[in-house]
Image (cartoon, rainbow, N blue to C red; front, side, top):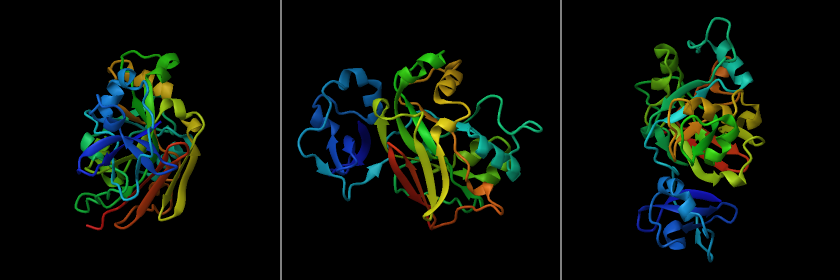
Length: 294
């Protein structure tokens, strides 16, 4: 199943069941009268709500309906850097990586950083350029993992049992801030720097070990890879994060980006106002955002 948060007729954010092929949606509070919460609450109470949940009747058209970011995370998004070999190599050659050990290309352990909840925006929302703060805006197409069952000390063998679903994330980055400040948090966490969506597909309907991720900038294909090429796969990331941090329902893990980001070109090809970034992950959908003109 696919779920989104839409702006309903009463202008209220409403969680909904989605059929992206027919472009129809069903508000969850109409499918289950006892449920009137958010998608975050749906995830946290999935075992109680899921039974019998499914499309009923013709639903409503998605045409002209605003699709919001599916989640409003209460905690920072967990992100992973340099998690595809070819991207790690392009980052190393770019001169922007001040985090690596001498001679290191692929990291020995997962490189973990975070993005703030306020960085999250939805499908078709404009990405603020922050022109007074950065001049080197870049894109990173990534698979997002949504935690369902929380826990600490989760083993790789049991990791997928803790995954509720998957979404698309654009890990927008201010490369000059990332480079100048060495720690990546500031360059990754400016407001609007985490487009997410357009919806979440539940874990039972998506194969994270064989799905293609693609990214276009102004209709030019820049990134294309299979998510099975991750250096540290999803179970390894969940085991690493949960070793000393209790993961909670609704937590988001952004798994890293493949080769083809702006700094991988010579000279670098940064984003500018008006540029359009479109990310597609097979089995999930398409996330599209334009750099704001202001």
